Amino acid sequence: MLKIRISSPRARTTDHVHGSRIAIIGGGFTGATVAKLLVERGFGHVEDVTVFEPRAQLGSGLAYDTSDPDVRLNVAAHRMRAVPGTPSAFLDWLQSSGTLTVDPAAFTSEGIFARRRDFGRFMHQQMAPLVKDGNIRHLRETVSIVCRVNDQWHVTGAGGTKIVADMLIVATGHPPASRPRALEKLSKPTAMRVTDAMAPDALRDFNPDSSILIVGSGLTALDALVRLNAQGHQGKISLLSRSGLLPRPHAGGGFSPYGNFQEEALTTARQVLVKVRATILDAATHGIPWQPVFDALRQQAQCVWQRLPECERQKLLRRLRRWYDVHRYRMPPQVSAFLMEGMATGQVETMVGDLASVRQDGRDLVARIATRDGCDLTHRCQHILLATGPDFRDYGTHQNFLLALHREGLVQSDPLGLGLVCDRGGRIISLDGCPNTSLFVAGPPARPAFGELIGVPEIAAQAANLADTVLRTLARRNRTIFIGRQD
Ligand SMILES: Cc1cc2nc3c(=O)[nH]c(=O)nc-3n(C[C@H](O)[C@H](O)[C@H](O)COP(=O)(O)OP(=O)(O)OC[C@H]3O[C@@H](n4cnc5c(N)ncnc54)[C@H](O)[C@@H]3O)c2cc1C
Image (cartoon, rainbow, N blue to C red):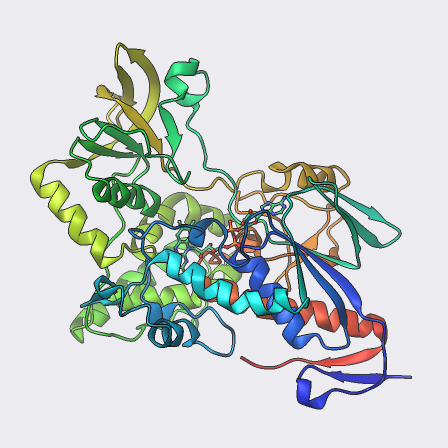
């Protein structure tokens, strides 16, 4: 007999079908959003949603699990479309919770740029009732082992908790930062002065007059700059990167995204570049700055990516990635103001080159920097901060449980170094080329299928699509119908 299950609570049927157990590994923004959607939409199909996440709160993850008042979101609040179906939820919450009253610095001529910790608070308030009511089980453990036994997933946390699930969703987010080779064989005292900029206490022991070399010049580097400024740092700060490019500023004026990158098939990286340049010129004739063009490109980037053949995706990453990144990942206006001041006074400088080696000389670290024209520069500093960004290469082997799945051929890292091979429904594709209907990947490591999948709005949309795919799969297994919804 075919039974009908409708996702709206108002249309529930009373037939009892045994629901499925779903395990989610990782409870940052992605894992939390998927869990919430499965609970909200999965009536009758889902018996239990368990999230393994060592952090105290669900929904924060690496980006928003911070108490630092100085680091801000890099997009305006109205663009943080975090809740599928309710795009203004975060902005509404900022206003109704009184958060903006105690943070007047959030208001800028480019829009409202809230604190990252406040987005973490918002997510906590979304998730806490579901955890409290027992709709979502939050296990504060890191998953160390996953085994497939008789079509079920046996998941074991580092604390010894074991659960059995019918469906498994990998939402492990950002891997550790890539480490330049030059930092591989440092002596212990030297290594102690090289810290990961994302670590919460990375800047704690810095003397305010010390000279600091930041390796990387993206948003992570600028975050470090802001945190140093907030703790009264007076010493020189040098940002080293291969391109020397910095994230660009936002534009004021409240422009809507401008440009259509979907109507014609762009099948080469070059065609994409030509189209973007032409759209920027066209926008300028209407008095529109380039930023809204990149906003449109970002919104349509998944479609552009999916139309490109693999070799052109590779070219795009090799030749245009840095260029795309600095226009797409723009700095909050508060950071922009500080950076301009720091550069004007000479406290902050940018350097172009590769970190070739590091050695200790008395109280100093001496960094050798290989420049593009084949010369070597010597740079003295007291600390090195690593802000190279997460390294998604070999994602399928960067954690023990993934390595075990990789050895069984159940997951594979994609050749372009973006994450795990999967389809657009988030189903992980095994080594034999088949999508696994009970093993999914959500959020940034699902980028091979999407290209652009780092920001909150894109992740929220993928989470909704993935939740519906999971529920449809369960309905098929239970011989019922899942009627999803359009967001
Ligand atoms: C510093 C920073 C600032 C950002 N700012 C913005 C912004 O302003 N606007 C925007 O739109 N986007 C921003 N982003 C991007 C975006 O919000 C993130 O990509 C998104 O939050 C990703 O969430 P996630 O849950 O997939 O990954 P993560 O945040 O990395 O979370 C993954 C979680 O998985 C857990 N985990 C990992 N392995 C295991 C395991 N084995 N067992 C159990 N748990 C595990 C980790 O503890 C972690 O909490 C920012 C990203 C960063 C890093």
